[in-house]
Length: 145
Image (cartoon, rainbow, N blue to C red; front, top):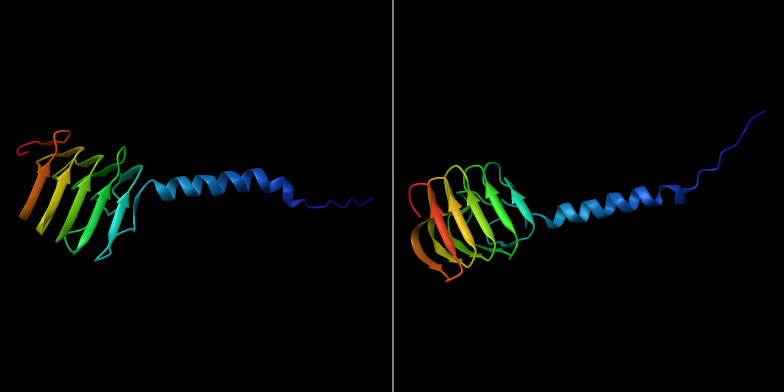
């Protein structure tokens, strides 16, 4: 006696719904667009860790980037937190480079901080530019703020 089973797609609906929702959460918990991208306007929400190898976001080769770390967001790298050649960072959350520099602008640019920036060695480093730290901001480094 053979028994025929009818496959019902509705039985998969709960699993598919969870898969889709977890994908959205992961997509939002990072900086977008993902580097490497020159001339990018990136927004960071949620928790971003080592999105660019050992850097939280960016590389020493990116130019003309504008990065905003939203309130409540964190960008953390084992080496540097946020790094690029030229551009600007507006931080309302937390940026941390646990091994080296929190906010590292290799060339020229600006950092505006209302949150916290920390680095294992240096809190913020700008070769040629402007650093603005609001009353609510905190910048700290292992050897140099």
